[in-house]
Length: 115
Image (cartoon, rainbow, N blue to C red; front, side):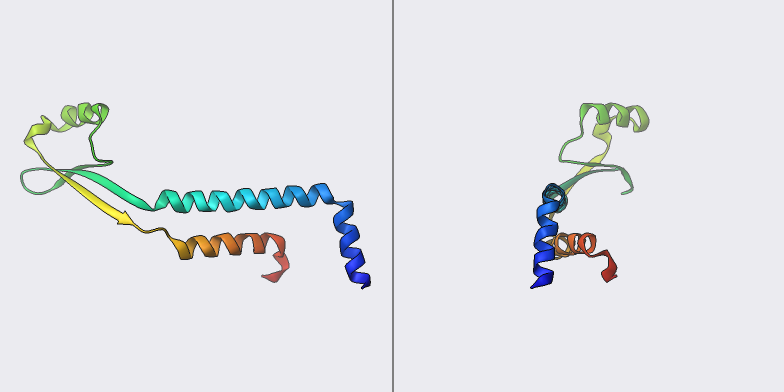
């Protein structure tokens, strides 16, 4: 019972610090989730291939921007002389990695003498 009173008095004395820690952990959890969401989903890559089948240029997205097209044509010649392939890949949500990071990081931060 004495240890329980010490813990409750510690929490009452440092209430602001504990609130800041809880908010920080929540923001860390949200950042981990946002990174996992950003890494998943439909990812497209546009590949430009020459006549002999060599990959000349590769960019993210489904279209070549005007900026990239300008520099491509300046470097390799007219864009119409090359074959264009669109590679689309569906990446699933990395649940295991997200779960391990979401549970593991806060536990290590709270209890650093476990390791």
